[in-house]
Length: 204
Image 1 (cartoon, one colour):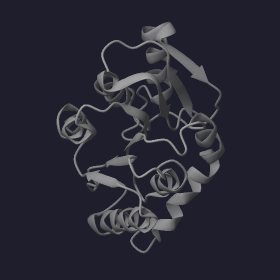
Image 2 (cartoon, rainbow, N blue to C red):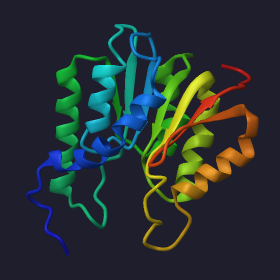
Image 3 (cartoon, rainbow, N blue to C red):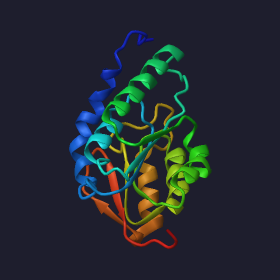
Image 4 (tube, rainbow, N blue to C red):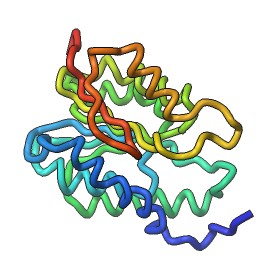
């Protein structure tokens, strides 16, 4: 087992650095507007900090970070807490309006997030939580009622290797979304991430 007990949280910036250009391209056009940005799976805060500095400048904008920050097979309590504190500090330093929901995404999307939104739609949602296909698909399904025409959904890690247990991964969930939602979604360019713009939406 690799000893990660003394790993600096900045180590986790590496991945977002690789996908930042794709992420920026998918979110182009939102900067300077009053938007709602939701991120599922914030980890050390690299993508959250970028969103705060580049997308949430308008005082009526708000970001919401959803992450339970619980220990798992790879990371113990001490490392998880360092990572969580890193994310909180990085986001706070930007001065952007941001709320944290330290709970599983399925729980947050069913109630607490809706209370925070107070009737506003999500403009951008970044789905980067559990990478099992069923969890990714659940996040999207629960988020769908909170989106509007013009909203952007970004799935991370579509280009990475499948889960260690051999089950369906992010890519399979994205393929299911594209098949089932069809022309309601417009696929945006990307290789490591999959992004869609909502074309048709009833309700919000």
